[in-house]
Length: 150
Image (cartoon, rainbow, N blue to C red):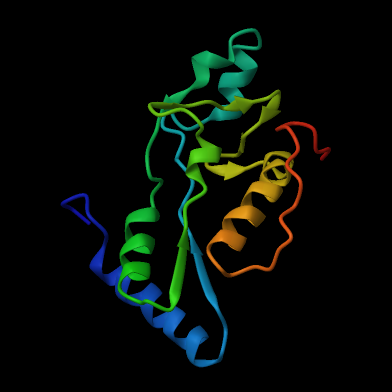
């Protein structure tokens, strides 16, 4: 929205879609959008190629991504929806998001996460889902980031 808040039309559309899923008997779990690389111009791969010895040069300011405000607002309006935000693991520092964590490239294309990084987060995601009451335990063992192959 122009004021920087969630787009009301998007909130309504997402809420209506989720209501249809709920009415069909599905459990709705909404995920926050990932932080959107904003520097350098969102091209993480180009930056990494240009700075092979200094990945810190490719960090970008932490943000909610483009969809999170609407997703969060729609989830807040529907008590049947569980909202999950994994961004403390996608962007594990408070001010700037690294593009490489534990030797693993986090982003591909513009704001899509790499398969390897997502796999490294699977045990953490499972724990979050168990804690939210939307998945069954036992919790998966945690493995260090980067230890899961592509």
